[in-house]
Image 1 (spheres, rainbow, N blue to C red):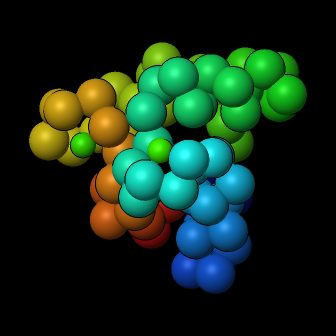
Image 2 (cartoon, rainbow, N blue to C red):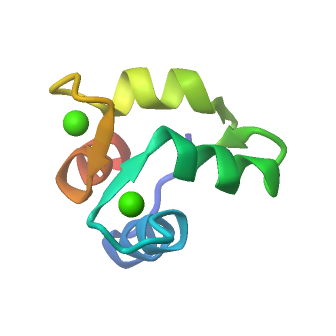
Length: 70
Ligand SMILES: [Ca+2]
Ligand SMILES: [Ca+2]
């Protein structure tokens, strides 16, 4: 996966977190994926959630999101 800067990761997070709740839900990822061929950085959305959601609550916080791209 290509390296993103911290600012780019934050911008991407904000782009996906359309209700600005501070966490990304699968439904938000789906909406984002519909416009982006169902993948994020070349990773399938369902796989992305499994990988990025380190505490398993099915929501991706900015911290988890950053960790994933770090
Ligand atoms: Ca959200
Ligand atoms: Ca989580």
